[in-house]
Length: 180
Image (cartoon, one colour):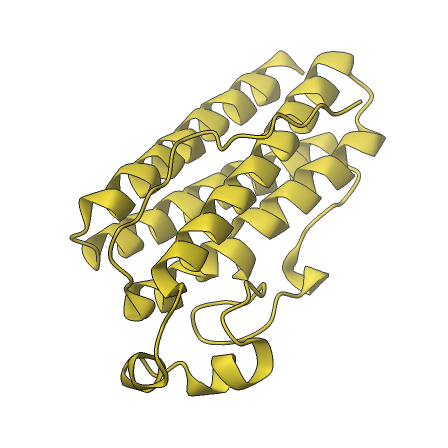
């Protein structure tokens, strides 16, 4: 059973819109190594795991990834809230805007929509845990790349928080792999 607490895992209060930054951060919402794919991967993998403690880790991290999805969506929303058409054009968001206005749509920074085709669920605990370890490292690298383009402290802090959680998830999956 999941319990939803109506608050973000880390506070987000962005004061300055920045559609160019939103355009790259959206990749952690629905990109190839983003939070949507991570949450679905772990919550799907848990069904075939024969060990309760590893099933619990997958469930815990999968649910936390849903919270991260909410945080990334909030960041992108706050970075694009109340944009003028001129700001949308200057950021190169016209095509996104035509299809989604400034709604949060799961896509990569390149504009490619989210697809579950890149999500791995093999039903083999060793293969799945190795996939999970790699997924957490790829997400960390994506957050590292986002940090290279960001100088707004209102955005830096939650992105750093999310990056740190990827490291913790990597450690937890490593612990799970060593238990079986």
